Each structure stands twice: as C-alpha cells, then as structure tokens.
Image 1 (tube, helix red, strand yellow):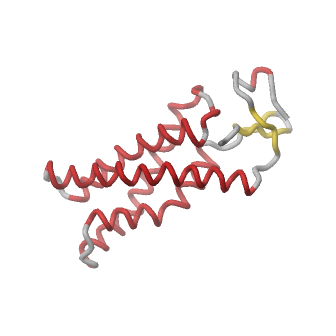
Image 2: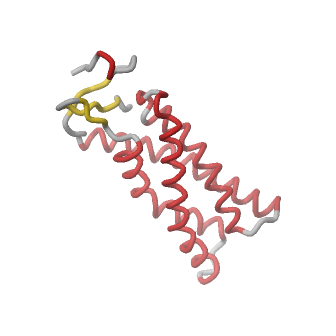
Length: 161
C-alpha cells in the first residue's frame, strides 16, 4: 500500500507492520556488498597510514575506520536505503559514525591480540575483526539507523532494493 501526503516526502513508501525475512536478507546482501568495497577502502587507508605515513597500526585503525565509514555510509545511503530521503541524512551519518566508533573500540583489542600475540599481520587482523563485526553492524544499521518509522497505526518502511 502506497502512503501519500506529508509523510511520503516525495518518495514511494510501503506500509507494513513488519519486514519480511526475504526483504531483510536482501538488505543484508546489499549491506554486505557495500561492506566488501569498504574492506578495500579500509585496508588501503590502513596500509597507507602505516606503510607510507609511518603511523602505528592502532592509529592507522582509527584513520582507516574514518575513511571506510564515510565511504560505506555514502554507498549504504544511496544503494541499500536509497529512498529514505535527505531529511535526516546528517543524523544518520552521525549515528553510523558512532556505531563504527563503538565497533572499533570493541574490535581494536582483537586486532591488537591477533597482531601482537598471534603474530598475524595487522592488515589481516583488521580484516578478521571487521568480518566478526559484520552481523552486529548490519542489525544496528537496519533496526536503529535506518529503521522503519511509525506513522499512526502503520509503520512506514522505505522501499529497499
């Protein structure tokens, strides 16, 4: 059912009381696709910061996270949740950045442990930590940052896909 009026904000929205498993799986696959490109950006930023600039790999993790967070947000915003509109984009970016900062605080010790204790290259340790965090980051993005918003008794869900 299409929702019109002031709540549509010029985009087609579908009214549903819950998201189907198939729709969520589709969003997760798209989120994963974006994440794969973000792994490349993250690894490039990390190895450049450490190798070319000479910063410690832990500082490199922070730099790489900032770079890949911005990259991933742009792609997620325009591909996965493209019909959410620009009205709350800055807020979503800040939430996405905060989520990734918290994720970095959680995965940082894993990277250090794998690198220092496990003697695994810092870039490989970083990739492993990002893979471990994928599902949690998707759930926060899907259910908090780009969540469906209630409108009266219905729930407005942006068209994903």
